[in-house]
Image (cartoon, rainbow, N blue to C red; front, top):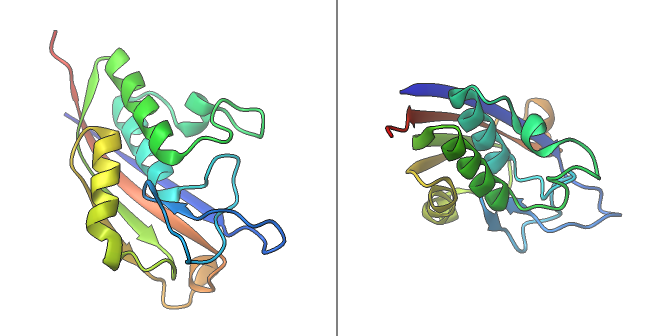
Length: 161
């Protein structure tokens, strides 16, 4: 068994450039503008991807999907990126076992959709994923409502042939 950690943070998009809000594999209608990024900006999925890759010793999200508007991951949803990451792990002899994601920000309120978010991430990751959320009591960019962050831990096992 191997464990890895991942982190991601993005600012909310400008009101001049409206975007859908995607978080933890779900679209959050009516919760304000979405997150800036070349993909959908799903910080929970991105942190989980980094945690899985770190656990397997396979780099990070930028190494797998590239960086920038012309990258492989540009325009992708976080859940699709997560499924592709799991396929990459399996190709390299690793299987996700369990994971946890903590979302940091003022909005959206995760509690009302926590089970749905955990189910979406679990389905994409192929293992149980727990989801928690917190605020920073008005400190930092997440506390000021400028964006979201997430931290994740993942446990992977080496596949037995």
